[in-house]
Length: 467
Image: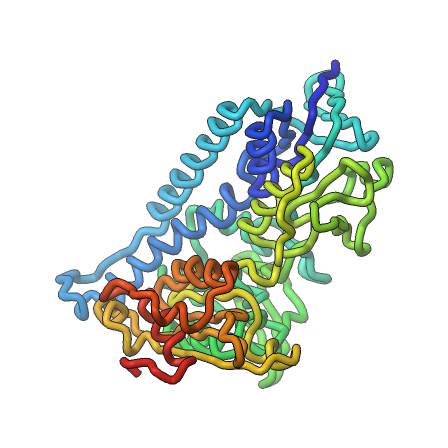
C-alpha cells in the first residue's frame, strides 16, 4: 500500500507537529508519522507534566513550611503526591488531544508506526498491521527527538535505576533518591520530590549546579536547594550502583572522599543522545555530525540530502522544546520554497523551573568579555522589588549584559520568582536592537516583577532609583 505527499514529517514532538501544521498552512499535502504519542517527550513525559507537578510542589512547600507566614491555619498538612500525579496526567492528556485536533484542522494526516527512509523521496512505515505503508514524498522533515544518555555501569532498569520517563509516570515516590546530573532536569525533579519529603541527593560531575548558567544564577539555586534540604555533591560522581531488595546502594566519589548511600531510586539526568538509529539515514544520504548520530543541517534546516530536513534534538543545536518548534517551522517553510530567517541559537531563551526559577539567553558576562566585548552590566535584586516582597519570594536578581558603547543587549541571566516569564521582553529587545536606554525608558506597571528588568537596565546606566 502506498500514498503520495508533498511532505512527510517523521516524529510528532515539539519539532515535528509544528512543522506538519505549518506545512499544512502553506498548502502542502502533509503526513506526520509517529510511533508513540503525539506531542513527544515534552507533552507526555517532559516539559508539561513536570510544570504541573512543580505547581503542586510549590503549594505543598507553602502549606508544609510557610503556612504560618501566610496566616494559613493548617495543622499537620499532608500533601498528596498521587493527586499531583493525576493532575499532571490530565494536563498532559488535554494538550495531546489538542494536537490531534490541530493536525486535522490543518489537513495533516497522522500515520501511526515506525518510519524508515528508503530514499530521500520514500518513507516506509512499519505499522504492525500487515504490509508496510510506503509514503512517496517530495520532501521529508526528520524530528525524532532524543533520549536520556546512558552512563557506563549505571544501566537503567526502569524500576530502581530510572530516567525522567519512569519518574514522571510513577504515582508514588521513594523515601530517598539520588539524582545524577544537576542540570535543569535534575534540579527540577529535586525541587518536586523534596517538596513531598523525599530525601534528595544530587551528584554533579562539574563544579556547580546548573553549570551551563551564569555562576551567580547557579549560586542562587544552590543556596535554595540547600535551604530546602537537598544535598548537592558538585565535582562528584557515582562510581557504582548496586541494586538491593529495597532499592539501590550508590557509591559516590566526592571532594570529601568516597561514601555510600541507600536510596529507593537512582535517576540518571546527565544529558541526551539523538534518536537516529535505524532511520535509514545512510540510505538517504543524510550526513551525521558525530558518532552519536546528530544530524547536520544548514541555516534552512536542510541536511546533506537535498529535500531532507531535520529539526529539534536530532540536530543537537539546542535541546529545548521551543527551539525544536522554531526549527520545525523553519524546516516546513524551507520545504515549501520560502526563505525562513536563520535562527540564532545563542539568543534562544532557556529556563529552569525550580524554586526560585532560573532563566537566561545570549552571552553571560564572562562569555561576552572572553569574546572581546567591552561590557556594561546592569543588575537589580528582587529584594528591592515590591511585587516579589508581596509574594514572599525576594531571592534572586535580573542581570543584563550589554555592549559598553552602544548599550545593545548581549544577554541576560535571571534568578527569582517567575523569571522565565520575563524573558520575552528581554529577547524581543535584543531581537529588535533595543538598548539599555530603551528598556529603562519603557514604563512598567507597578508593582510587577517585570519592573526588575527596567531597573536592571537603569542600573547598567548608573541611574536605578530603587537601588
